Image 1 (tube, rainbow, N blue to C red):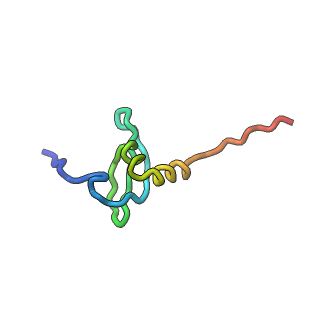
Image 2 (tube, rainbow, N blue to C red; image 1 turned 120 degrees about the vertical axis):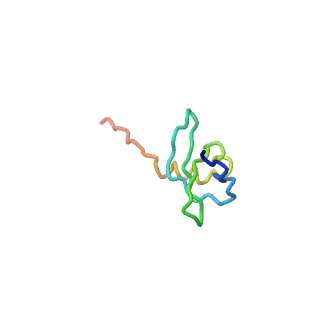
Image 3 (cartoon, rainbow, N blue to C red; image 1 turned 90 degrees about the vertical axis):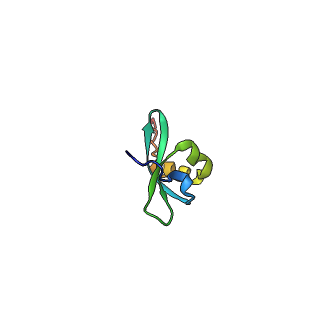
Length: 74
């Protein structure tokens, strides 16, 4: 039997450091979150991350955004 009693995510009461990636969990957006001062990582819901560490979420997307240049007609 698997022990799921281990504390995970924001319940660890650690400060979020950065988002390492994202995934779809049955239609729910999840982030792989790394915590400051530890090598621990957990999957956390995007809605919880948006509420608890919005600047980290913004930084995650800013680092991945790409812009397409519009073709200029001459």
